[in-house]
Amino acid sequence: MKKLVFLSTIILWVFGSAVQVSAQDVRLGVTFAPTISFNQANFTPNDASNAASIKSGSAGMRFIFGLVSDFNISDDKYYFSTGLVYTTKKASLTQEGLTDEIHYNLQYLQVPITLKLFTNEIVPSGRLFFQLGGGLEVKISEKNKTENNTSNADPIDFQVVDVPLILATGMEFDLGENILYGSIGYQRGLVNSAKKIDAGDLIIRNQLLTFNVGFFF
Image (cartoon, rainbow, N blue to C red; front, side, top):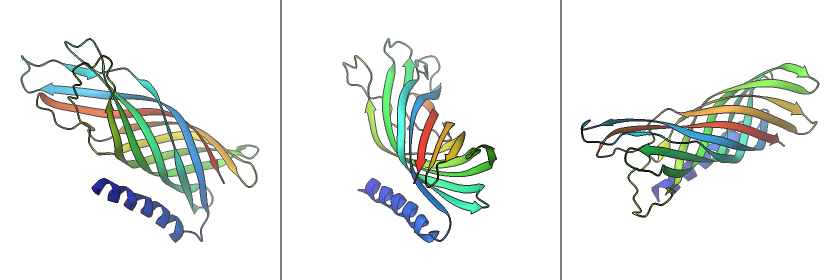
């Protein structure tokens, strides 16, 4: 119930922001991105002589999609960009003594909070942009997808909230009444996404390499 209230607050904040600046230049659109999802893991055991090491596992293909809003701040070159984006991630770990990789499928709702900086046209009706900022993510699903998990073990739980750094660069093309854009981006978790475990201190930071395609109406 608390999670539902929190998500509703985020959605109302996003759309409330759009209403408040309706007199300004506002662009509403959609985005979709296949992603390469990977993570960085560091483990410090409580007893170094009696604990199996835990390291980062393999990367995996995932995707993100959702609604985006750009608010013109100044001169059609500076935009505040936000939205509501469904984001999937793969968290993988290898542990000493286990032959199978520990693999989790994580799903989040993300509210990006970023700034877009645009150049002048560098090709007809096309200009380059740079995007930087952060975001707030709320976990909506967590599943242990480890192969041959006969014991049905689930030794790691993940935090409800993650906070990513968001960086991207791309091109947008003016199609008249609509705008098409594409970008390559990188997202890195700034906080530890793993909850505390008994064996020691485990730090997991999720990362995404994104290939965005979007359309503004």
